Length: 227
Image (cartoon, rainbow, N blue to C red):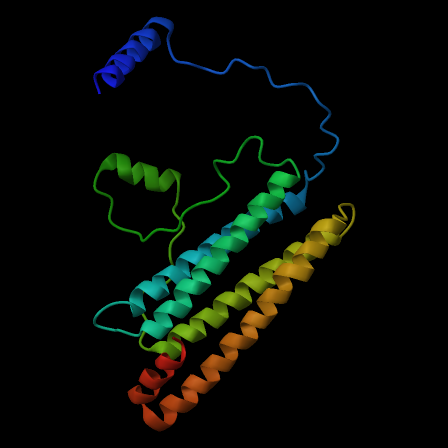
């Protein structure tokens, strides 16, 4: 212990004497011809990343609501928490793709805006911060029942799917023709979105039938099938 403390003190003295330790290696000069996403397709990719993150936070809000002790629908909570994880992973994969294409070497601070709940500012400086940087907000945080939540989830998936389709149209059109990206979005993202929409629509149909005949008991029983 004494040796460790002595080593830390020595390191502090050296740091104070020589200043902050900084890497002084220069960035090597290499061709940038391989970095060719400098158009509306790149802007669309950044927008899609934000859409995926927004969807993830909305699903988190859903999961949190159904986890409340006053609501207590663990099946719905688990379903929405799982959906939040999937949307977050979608955003991460798109970030990884941009990195592969050489688009994350600088200017990443504006890549993702974290959705928050709006509140009254506590100071003049906070008011100015909100005005200068309007936050992305979680659209909804409470639901009347499971059916309304699934309906919102389906609307959310439709919105994300339309955004992906718009991105595909942008990236495959002239003069861009980013064939590799379009194939990736069509074969991976769009495929999963369409299956996801069908799954939610099916669950919503079944739940509404059960609630029409059994009311809240129908929702309670359906919740058990989600576990």
